[in-house]
Amino acid sequence: MEDGKSPIAEFLDSLSSKQAQKVAWVLQLVEELDAVPSTYLKKLVNTDNIWEVRVQVGSNIFRLLGFFDGDSLVVLNHGFQKKTQKTPPRDIKIAESRRHDYLARKKHE
View 1 (cartoon, helix red, strand yellow):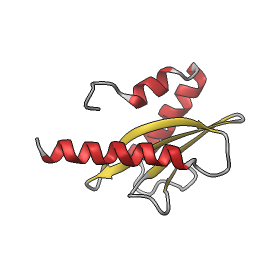
View 2 (cartoon, rainbow, N blue to C red):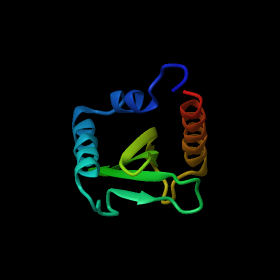
View 3 (tube, helix red, strand yellow):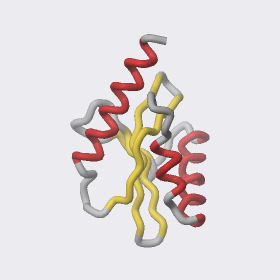
View 4 (cartoon, rainbow, N blue to C red):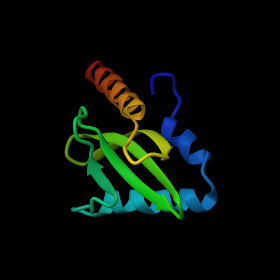
């Protein structure tokens, strides 16, 4: 982020050790597998190329939103605990806004 903060690091710091371990395991799957099951990674429809990393720990459901930069780099820019069936539009807007900021900064580097 432009202000030096990392929303994903802050989100991970808010999790219990067990929750953070499961998130790390799912992120490793996303990194290592060529075809990640939609149980763990899926593109959100009607968004500006936002993808959702899906993590469940017991009855807790967590989502990390982000996008692809090129073919292989996934930029995660928003995390939250999901309490409703659908991904809240507010959280999608946050991820889309951070995506636009990232791409604008990258363009001017």
